[in-house]
Length: 159
Image (cartoon, rainbow, N blue to C red):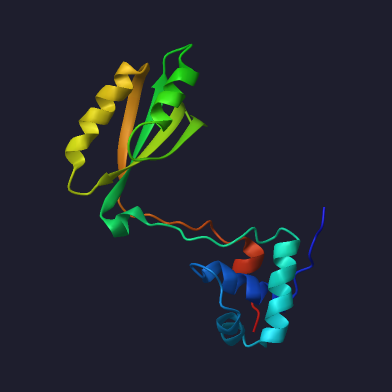
């Protein structure tokens, strides 16, 4: 396993990368960190090559598009897990399905238009018919799309 030693410059660059939404502009990172583009570029390339940074992607915030994330915590009848999971992942508006979520067998997250909460009972009925015997629901109105920063990135004074 390759381990990259992170010095203060590397941590500054990584912090800046984590704050960016979308593909990084190296000149902006250089400006934000007070480092030259000639310093920033090899650090970013090395972090990509070493697998520290796996890529750059756009993250969609459903609430900004007028959708709520509706979370269903589900328990599935014994012997129907695979069938129920396949059914759930093929439902309309599914963002993701996870298995083994806390005290529940799975979690289903769907994007519902904010003005169409009347669709929720239809989801509950479809799930009941698919072998799900218990569900709890919550509407997730505010989303956060980033993982918390590790302590070494958050707490270290770099100035």
